[in-house]
Length: 315
Image (tube, rainbow, N blue to C red):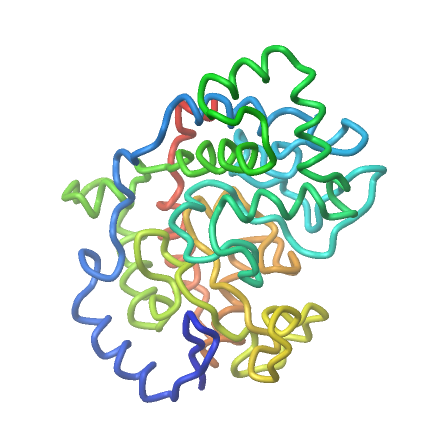
């Protein structure tokens, strides 16, 4: 069994065994941390970034905005297996949630963007998504008095491609969901989750799910191979398409489990339609074991406790 590090290299099964040995006794208050109640953000940039996030001016034909694929009222994704871009063109990978994305160590499934600011540039220039360029967008925004004024009040150089991505990234950075029942449980509110969810969390730890899904985002903090014990039959080759290294074939960023109840379908290719199916697939592909139906039910109950209210900023 192999674990893939942040740099994309691999380490032996001994590391996995060691981590599991540590994880089981430590439990809730160490390997998973609650989302902070507040995050430092420039609210003027956030306000501007929010306006841009919802504006289809970012796309070539004025039909697609960031919110098209990242519906903030529905989990921060679009609920589709593959998103549609301009002229109805279909993508080939499942849109991840934008919520809590600031806690990911890389952006996109294959980790090609190092931060949110770099991530913003990808969809704008992707011919299947917005098919535009930030340079062209900047020229359009300069002609819009409201935008020109807003950028001028924040940035000394006004509307530029870099400032556009900076403002949107600042808005996305502020999209955190800190008040799930499980967060409240971690903060000491022991009745915030059900007994079934508590049992599910114990199984989540003891079965080894926590090896990949830990930290404040319960994932999103390193890469791992998809299909360790069984061939996952993925047409997307993950990190390999970025690095060209054989060891990076079918390696993807481990996704966050935050608000996962709201972000079906699951996996990079949307192959799992339900949470239950996702747990079953992961137990087979990544853990090499089958779980009892009642164990899966309990883990699903735990995963549902990760659902938080929509933050006021998104309304």
